[in-house]
Image 1 (cartoon, one colour):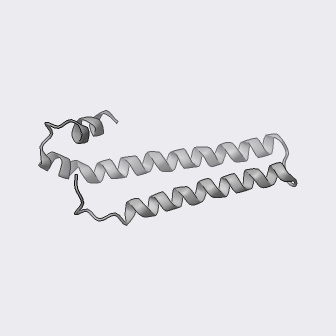
Image 2 (cartoon, rainbow, N blue to C red; image 1 turned 120 degrees about the horizontal axis):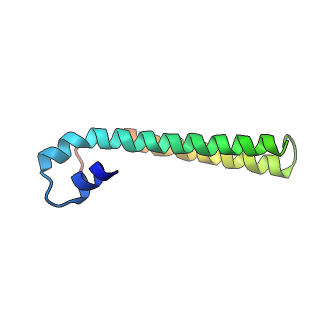
Length: 89
C-alpha cells in the first residue's frame, strides 16, 4: 500500500516509474481483492456450518449473499483484466 501510495498519489513520481510499476500495482491489488473475497466466502461457510443451516430462510440468505459476493468478485476481476493499458496513469 505504501509503495502504491508513493508511486501513484505523490505528485513528484516520474511517469516512467509509474508506467513500470502499474502492472505490479494492478496485480497486487487484484490479489488482495481475491483474498478478501475468499475470506468472505470462507466466513459465510463457517457460519452456516456453525449454525447447522441446511434448509430455511437463513440458509437461503447465506447462499444468496455468498453468490452475490462471488459474482461481485468475478465482475471486478473481469473489469480489471479487460482494462486497456493506454489509459491515464
